[in-house]
Amino acid sequence: MRHALKEMTAFTVLFLAISMAGHSYLMEGFRARTTGDFGDWNRIVNGRINADILVTGASRAQCGVDVLTLEDYFKKKCFNLALKGNSLSIQVARLKVYLKHNKAPEAIIQVVGRNMLRKPRAYNPGQFVPYLNEEEIYRPLSRISKHFILARYVPLYSFALLSPAFTVDAWQGLTGQEDPPQCNNGYCPVDMAWNRKSDIATVKKLYPHGIVDQITPEGKEAFEDLIRLCREKHIRLILVYAPGYYEFNDFVVNYREAKNLYHQYAQQYGLPLLDYSSAGITRQEDMFFNSQHLNYKGATRFSEELARDLGPILGPEGAGTDISEGKILTESP
Image (cartoon, rainbow, N blue to C red; front, side):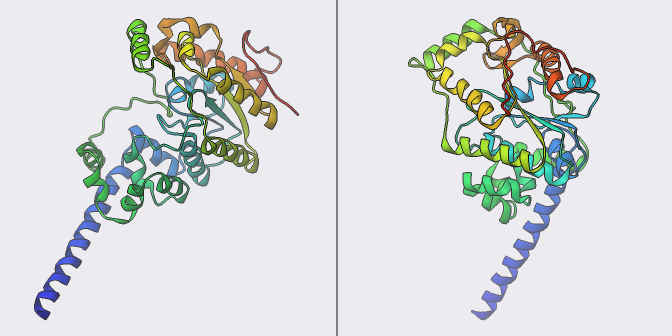
């Protein structure tokens, strides 16, 4: 009996040792990545960005704001820190990790719009696993799902839980066989046309009574956290309401309420707000790849317009210029 117990203990110790070694080895593969989500995370935690201007937000920011256009206009280093599909609380957590390892930017352009104030949500969870030692991102993720707790402390748990593609990502990093980069400084354009009629018909079928824009206490708390963080770090915070195709707004039951909330925030906290919800681009079907997201052509056009409109705020190149017609600049003392 005692001999069997010793063998079981030895096997358990050996199994844990092999699991921990394998886990650490695979994690090094993620940390070696230079492209994709892992590549951007590695640039963040290794302090290799240090931008003067950051763009933050979700997918509308990631595929809609070309930071190279902003760089060319302002002659300052820009980076798109947006997180596709993730709630504002996770966006702010990513920003905190960024500020821990990089210098604070002069300004943050926060792209707002539909569902920005939604309940906490972690989209594409595998991208966070190699960086769960960063407390700033681990804390909010652990409140969203216990799986992040297990992924941090149990060797190989995340590889068993997630799809085989997760392991492939690690192996590609170890072997240097990465996919070609599809993003540039965090900006990920989508060069695709849109079938508007089919998309609108699908929305009508799926949501016959309309869509409700999520506005939650957690979302509001995350927004206030963002404001506090920017004030503590002396960062200029600028809100940009991203353009969406105008016809879709009719399906959002509380569209005006949600949009007006950002104007209220701008006035309450003294923040500049550029509102593109009624801009000319919102009526140009060929500028979108779906109702909420600009395609490559639209992002190029929008980014040029955004750079000009940011001129009076960020200057000095644009000092004295006017905000484009149809935009609203709100800034209380």
